[in-house]
Image (tube, rainbow over all chains, first blue to last red; front, side, top):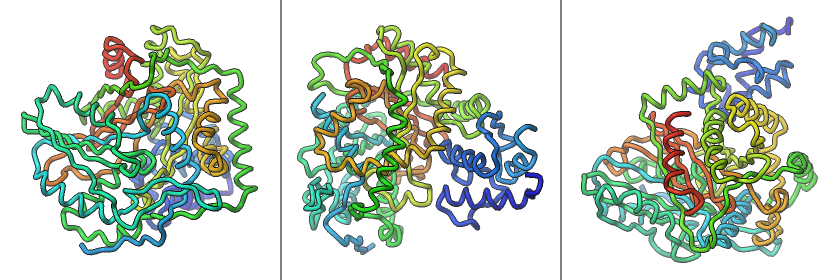
Length: 85
Length: 438
């Protein structure tokens, strides 16, 4: 994780959310809130599973607070800090 | 406005989920004589020109001959939806005038009415209420539409009748589907994943309410609990704080378990666990417009031990954990994929097979949280839409379910149950508790 920059994580999240929502990468803005992008409970859990498989972080067991998950940018920051923080 | 819908064939091969929905239809017909159908109700603040609506709906429905289709089996044994060259008869538009106190009963009557023939799958009933409001009930066959698809049909009709150029939207609608008679190993692998989950249910006896006898001829009853925009916003905030950001569905499901647990206890329902069958939409927001007809759903199946049902935080944790594991194991897609293998079975055989793992039961209750935006407009035929609700006939067994939807900032929770499963006092208590715990 230490070698992965926030920008790289952000890019990976954008691609995954675009796949979940069947949108193009360009349609998925990192600073728009996840509900506004069209993500619901199902899509959000799919995203959490992707995070576990890609970054080895099981975020479902974290508090899932709005601050950490509001936008792709916030989530990328959370992932770069790691699960323990 | 003069557009032709690209019907390339008169056959639309059914997916495994379409066939499963057909088996649930068969199961319900055998149990109560009713069908696997549902109804969207638009609550309009005013009146509209019904004759214009009838004419517009007739013209619109002619674009979709599959509205008069029926199921058949091909030479390769794959079941398909046979589409005639043209719509056999006009989509029914019935009108009734009534007092406000008679609206609920009329809506219940509407969704319980059987379609007139095997080629009728859609009927509209317009209720003109003496207080000046109107209800439009769109009663549809679940074999042709799922909940999101039915909202999409209404959305497209509203665009079309208001003069919008719908050519591109109409061309995107998928009306054909390949038979999917290849890639068998992939389907068997998916089946293995499903069997793994089903094995986890070994020894589980689903808690169910004692079913009234005889079941034959029993209608469905409904209780609608609506929350206004302010209440709905507060509920979403509570859901995000308690269950986690964007975790509305697990929150609503945990609330429903908490509410119904009391009713199950009062009726001394036997069973080790609440088994919850939750239908989920497999469409993404961007593909929904093209997938208007047939079923694009799958299921998550939850198991909540009766012993923890009164402890909300434990129920919520169990739902979140099981949801995560099932999505991680791609269970909904595996179920959809492996159900293609089941299409070989005649519906009576499949419906019996579906009841085997849980000793003659299917679930304790059905649940559905319908996504936002299927019908995005605040007007219909130029009348203000105050609310939109769903009234599904939940397949029997279990004949009991909850559907939650959001419209225009409002939140609705609708209880659907076969008459006699709950009494009036219990229904009143459930409605009051929904208001408290949501």
